[in-house]
Image (tube, rainbow, N blue to C red):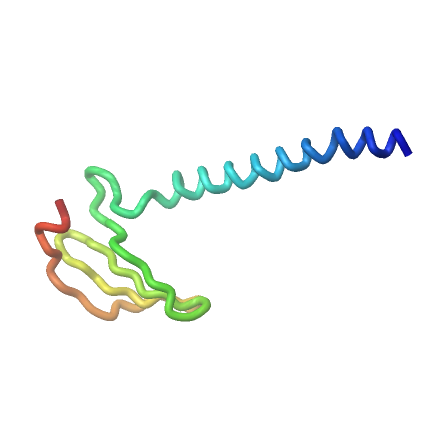
Length: 92
């Protein structure tokens, strides 16, 4: 019984550390691969806003070459719903 408790005391913190490390690594890689909303200097495509409508269905506004484009996103594809000139004050 003592051996079991010693193994548990050793392996439980190790398991918690592995879980925390994998969650931290996943979050870090997702932000690095997907980029942050707002984009960086020199990027032509900028994600402005997203909104979840239903499970698997989203609306997204992207800024591309001075235009804001409204996109409908679902599991089956992407559809351009509308387009407008980007507001110059917001893009700076």
